[in-house]
Length: 129
Image 1: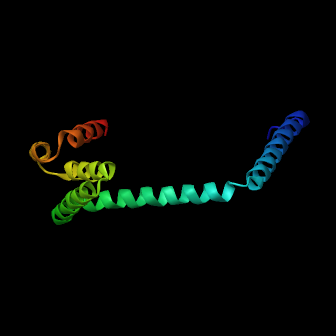
Image 2: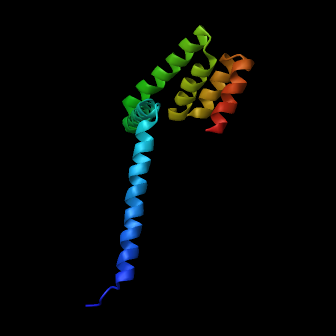
Image 3: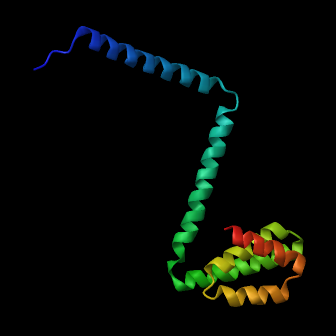
């Protein structure tokens, strides 16, 4: 067996002590932050929403589920357009285009039915994804 020098052991213990001290300092600083719980809740909520969004996508392997999702997104897009919520409508119609089997034909139909002031931002939003 090789003997480790006392200096090496001392340095290792010193580094470990500094690391543990930093951990205690960081934990105290984190806990004393008044917005810590608020930020923690927001992060958890965002993570949960991201998981819900991915679970919605994972269910799209079945043809009937895809069809239902497509129709639901088109209906939500139309409802939001009638209410004047253009951003929400663009998001839902974009989801419908994403799962559509023939997106080119759907885009042609949307181009004919949507006013140009709504269709242009819709196309720019879709191309950014």
